[in-house]
Length: 127
Image (cartoon, rainbow, N blue to C red; front, top):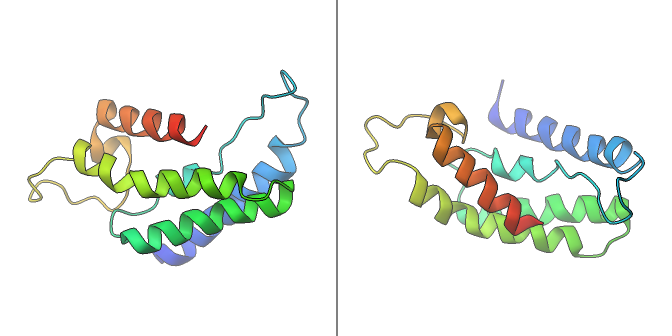
């Protein structure tokens, strides 16, 4: 499947699940809502340029802001993690590109520990 089609389908899936399932479940506390939509930004391919990453991050957050009536809240958080993502990936991926031929972040591509650090840092920045 084409990367563009797969990423558009992934974005639509994450936004629809977030809006129609996760935002409707009874909260553990009135301030706790589970968020999974930002995983779309974390799982974008390594080949996405920084400018497009910022645009995609902003539009992802803006689309959720449209559904949840929170102007700019999710857009700012997603733009922040889209901005920081290349720096974190640069720190955590191997510098030798001959053995690194993966297309997107995953435990298989980055090994478990760097991938866990990658997800943890960006999750903390988002929240």
